[in-house]
Amino acid sequence: MNEHDSCDKCKNYITVFSDINAHKIHPTVSSPPPNKNKNNMFPPSPPNNKLIADVINGYCDDIAPESIKEDGCAVCACVYPLRHLTNLLEAKVELGVLNIHGVTRRERLNQSDPIDELSGPVIHNTLSNICKDCISHMENGRVPPNSLANGNWIGNIPSVLQNLSWVEKILISRVCHNRCVVCVSSSGMHKLAANAVFFSTPMPKIYKALPPSLPELDEVLAFVYLGPTCPMEKDFK
Image (cartoon, rainbow, N blue to C red; front, side, top):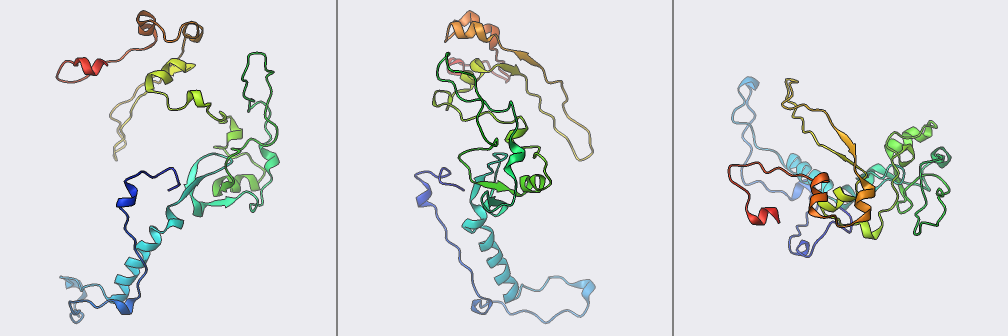
């Protein structure tokens, strides 16, 4: 977890575990003598002190801050545990392989600003680590498939476009698409299959009048209520 994954109530719900030594455990139930018949081991013998200590210590290792904390990869921007990340300065990789032309675009604050690219390798400039998968590809001189340089760069989100509602995201989206859910069972049969349909949003029409009127909104936004009862007024709101 990072510094953003917390709330005001977290301080009231904290449990601290610590490693223990096997000799400090005193089981209340003595272990019965081993059963000579291995084919009839029921009920099984209770765990010994060493096994109990190994389980507790292993759990403490799994929930240690070093195992829980996460950070993003500067090359692919994916989030990984810190143990799977290496500092860019310590990683022996050549960032020149990420110098891809035509991927980035410098932010324009005015219509008269020139269209220009960002200089240097295509990485996330606020992150300083790199994941193991990206290292393995870059060591062989290849561009990682999930890297920002492989056509996945979108730049930093402007403050005016952050924390948008679902409807607001639809209105400013350049392309709308339907979403199909496919449930796959262990037998390999699927429950639902459909084609994904993409169509361009009439952006010039929306840009001229924001927010659009209700008749115009009906052309680009539709919703369907499913259920045994009719929607209430609060549902439409």
